[in-house]
Image (tube, rainbow, N blue to C red; front, side, top):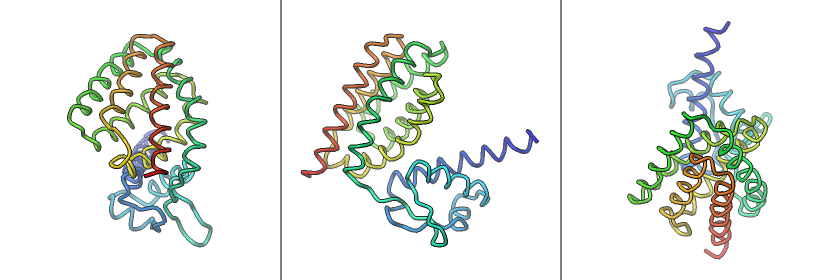
Length: 218
């Protein structure tokens, strides 16, 4: 069974990552209908991994599965995003502190590398590169915290947060500053400084909350 399940899991992860990026970058727009056969053909991946990926995206509220009506990309709502940030702030702080305490030596080296990537992206003002590095950073933080419950809760929020950022960042966000705030968290975790990691996490969430509220006036 194991030799057969591993490739399926890999294909499901590929399907998930591809569809998630299409949704987050608004290539699949809010409210648009999705078709398993069309996504399967687009990605060159079988329908079973695509179906499993869509089920995961439904748990993350990026898509809604409507019985007998199909699958649609979820709408974007500022009020919901602010409620999400209330929870995300507490979890981000917990994960940053836990990662600073529990990260392995290999993970700490990866945090140093990812901090350098964020700083380079800030200098280049590369929004798409930031989006992809941010996803890698989120996964690394959740892994390095070594707390499956916190990681599972955070996984439900990151896609929605990145999509909201992508929609509004050109009008309301300072991407280079946001990238530097991410780099500060990564460096604090790499150094094993729990208090600094938590403080850096709070500063990032302060900036994200201001950005989210600014979209209302924008």
